[in-house]
Length: 66
Image 1: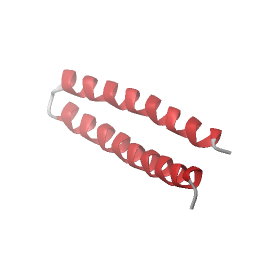
Image 2: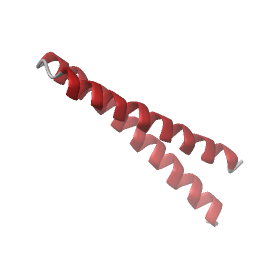
Image 3: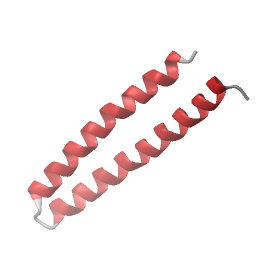
């Protein structure tokens, strides 16, 4: 397996991992809101947005390997 093939596997793994975290952030933010912790929920949603943007960069990096 060459370096580019290994890079593809690594990027795919990071994308999957990041997507999973984004789902967890959203769920946890909902739970925080349910407990009346709106500012904490707001900040966690900001984390989710930033994470999503970084995952977009990972997707672009993966596509650029083609």
